[in-house]
Image 1 (cartoon, rainbow, N blue to C red):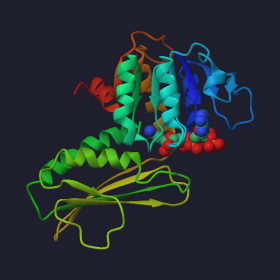
Image 2 (cartoon, rainbow, N blue to C red; image 1 turned 180 degrees about the vertical axis):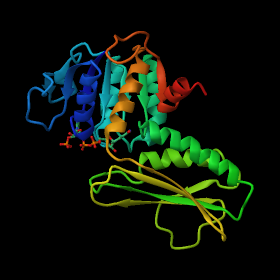
Image 3 (tube, rainbow, N blue to C red; image 1 turned 90 degrees about the horizontal axis):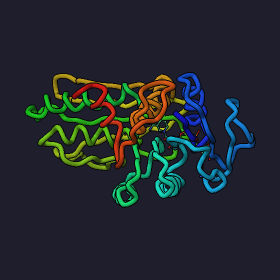
Image 4 (tube, rainbow, N blue to C red; image 1 turned 30 degrees about the vertical axis):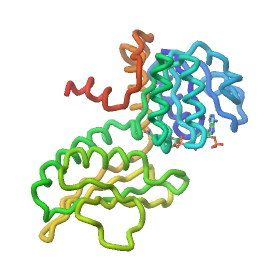
Amino acid sequence: MHIAIIGYGKMGRLIEAQALSRNHRITGVVDPFIKETQTPGGAPVFKTLGDGGNLGGADVAIEFTRPDTVVENITALVERHIPLVVGTTGWTDQLDELTQLVERAEASLLWASNFSLGVNLFYRIAAFAAHLVDPFPEYDVGGWEAHHHKKVDSPSGTAKTLIEWILSSMERKKTPVWETLHRSPAPEEIHYSSLRVGSMPGIHTVLFDSPADTLEITHTARSREGFASGALVAAEWLVGCPGPGGPAGTVQQGVFTMDYVLKDLLGV
Ligand SMILES: NC(=O)c1ccc[n+]([C@@H]2O[C@H](COP(=O)([O-])OP(=O)(O)OC[C@H]3O[C@@H](n4cnc5c(N)ncnc54)[C@H](OP(=O)(O)O)[C@@H]3O)[C@@H](O)[C@H]2O)c1
């Protein structure tokens, strides 16, 4: 599979290293802010998508940049018909317009607020736990997330997806509250807060709390490796690559999330 990388930060660099170790080829990297003209893996570096042309004939582009630039990148790549995997968070308020754009262009977009296999299993575990406690109103539901202090969006995209999974599994909880509360939460609210500190790659905790006890489910990312490998698995799935090092096959057309990939992998 031939891959273009958009955004050569922490995630972009890890994706290059993992893609090469899976015998894929990097055909180009786009990042306006880095000085190198070539990556250690030998791929050319372009300052802008415009400079990159067809990105060396990439089968798929993987985008991890910033919330303030991702929409422009998605628009440009959809218009060029390059299948796209997006890991950047903080843009899903524009998902409806971008979905229409992808559908009109008959293009391919796969996005996830979190590509790690563990987090995608965690969504399902938390949703099932929420379903089990739903008939017991003495169990309130809430939680918190923590990330490194350079993360620019808050709450995390993972937190938003996690709460969507929980709300869709419960009758008695309806509304997330992300900000500081200067009052008691209403019974139908889930209070979920964000902390930014130090270097941590990401922690998400869900609490089911009753007067008698607490059930606590936590996902802790130990490094960014799991995000990079998940994004590569997603890219292979999107363009019908049979596995590490394989060529692209039939491209899936439309807008997808990691959930589609997981359903295929898990068969449920
Ligand atoms: N979905 C997931 O599984 C997952 C996992 C980890 C992170 N993320 C998200 O992915 C994004 C990137 O994370 P990261 O840790 O790799 O951040 P990062 O180290 O800051 O990398 C972002 C890179 O994109 C560059 N960039 C900025 N504008 C650009 C543009 N117009 N075109 C191309 N590149 C551009 C940045 O340059 P400058 O640094 O000079 O601005 C930087 O090199 C964040 O939104 C983060 O929340 C998602």
